[in-house]
Length: 133
Figure 1 (cartoon, rainbow, N blue to C red):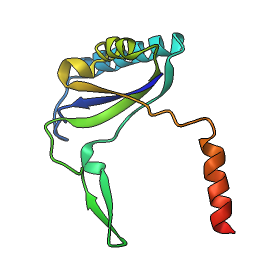
Figure 2: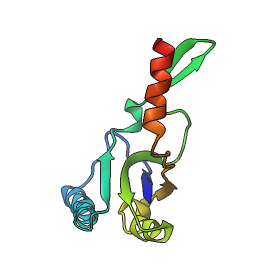
Figure 3: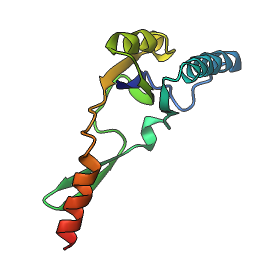
């Protein structure tokens, strides 16, 4: 089953002075974790995200598109990245989440992917063809 592991950490101020050694140690820990899940055939996708200040929130109200700079909600921790992993079960996903560096400074939210029926793509294509009719 596929699980989305969302990495939340307190966001560092843009002007924060972070020692180079700390950055290198952190990057090496993420690289080691990523290499392991790739080697085990669990890795589906994963990315780091730009700072929360670069986010744009989009809403549609009464047919109008509204945008807001920044995240939807104020939080102590910001979404900084994700992994999409194909795990045996929730226990394996949790075991892996606990080993991600973000878990020791913030949190890792584990969410199962809602797997759509195998005929979903055909149903969508058929509905699109009918509406274009």
